[in-house]
Length: 218
Ligand code: PRP
Image (cartoon, rainbow, N blue to C red; front, side, top):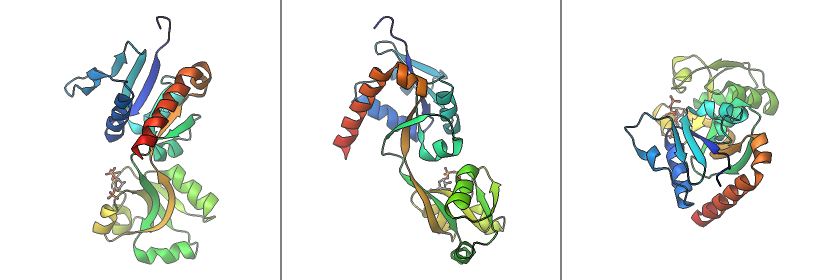
């Protein structure tokens, strides 16, 4: 144990991190100093188990994991797809479930049916491009936005959007609808490929314990 290296976790700030920590707690992995809301500390250590944890912005999680600054990351599938980093996706944690969808006013359905050269606003240009070019084989103009994507078709910036739909209430309240589903999303665990080899035993054990707990919750 003394010479064991630390396994470092990068967690996506917010609800996903809280749910991941709950799951780890059920496995007997705790990190009390992380619960202190007033703390400005960025990195937390569990000395006994030789684990480190840090919180980062979602899109940065795959970056830390690809470069090996974190061995393991937990982040949404949307972020993993958009980042296109060289990481192994090893586990679907089952929480944070939602869908990536093409949405717009009902009238925009014909633009899709006719494969028109439309504008698509999104926070996820890589996912939107892959879907329209490789799945739909439709040439479109993709416009990157940073939030409140639902505004785009309302104010006439684009015909449709590619965005996350969870409850569907943002769409409903703004007179928009799901036109097509791109893919289902949820929180995933990712691992650095070198860590996967060097720390195979520890990571496999961790995954096995997580799977057991997740099965019990089903
Ligand atoms: C997300 C997403 C939708 C909304 C969907 O936005 O972009 O706008 O949640 O959730 P619903 O189906 O339950 O209404 P978020 O709140 O993360 O903020 P953003 O608009 O700044 O991206």
